[in-house]
Length: 177
Image (tube, rainbow, N blue to C red; front, side):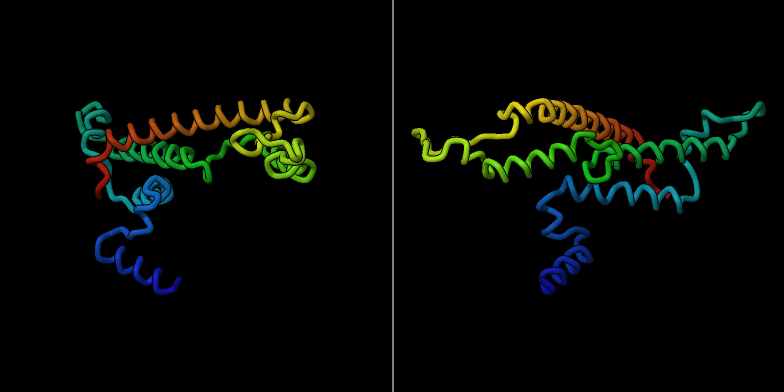
């Protein structure tokens, strides 16, 4: 483990990424990008010159404070969206998560991991039949609500990802200082 971490560190030093990063590029990107953008925002010295054309006073002189504020707003929005697209850092949570977890635990205790106690000894031509909590009437309502909320959360994170990448693409050549 230690040798592998040394190898990964060396790879990051020599090529900017390591083999481990390649296993899950999306996860690496989602975890790295918001922090990079935050540090960029906190340590930047200016704002894109194209913003200066939008914020001029009555004499046609750029109003740097407004430009910088607008750039901060754009960066904050990118940071927020990159964090929201990540399931681990998304502020929205499934309100049925705890109930769902309790149901899974109760289901496993009563019926086995895949409900094998519901049909003990019964086999079909493919082997054992798998059962899930949503098949049990007492769990059906919460499971339905839980999965509907999961679908909505996935869509929310997908929308955040699309908007974040759209902003990232639009301002890509301005991400330098």
